[in-house]
Length: 179
Image 1 (tube, one colour):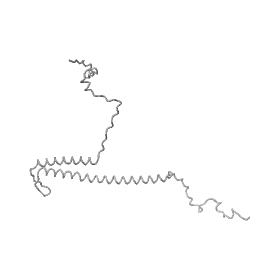
Image 2 (cartoon, one colour):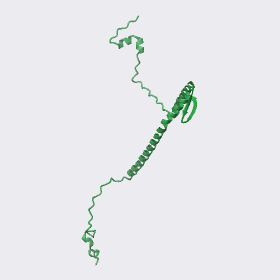
Image 3 (spheres, one colour):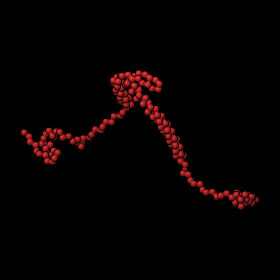
Image 4 (cartoon, one colour):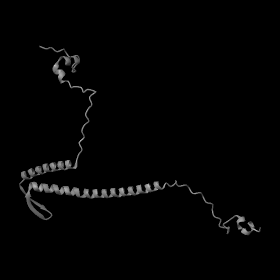
């Protein structure tokens, strides 16, 4: 008969007790060795085919649930809408009401989505044109724009635009080639 030592502290078993009892030592999780390299987790890429398969599986599940719903609700009811009337099973009538409700939500939402797509396309085109302009400007490598020098005001009283009196003299006086 094996005796175990009493626990030293409340709920935690002592390490000596685990070493003495082979069942408790086996129940302890094994610590991974520090020197052993861990394998890298495999990342699985999602594919379109996988998405299609998932959509088809969910669609088949929904169709089966709808079929069960229609078969369980086979009592006929009379439906009156916009002056027309007909008899249909309750399940079919409820599914038609749900479909019309979805159309009431989808129609305005589809219009809004189209508006947003057009605005996004327009913004994309504007950004491309700005990028082209910026690229053309950077390729030109023009110097930064300088401030123009302030001009002197024109003198409207003087009929002669050239104020230098020496330039008014004829050229024959300044250069003589009588040699």
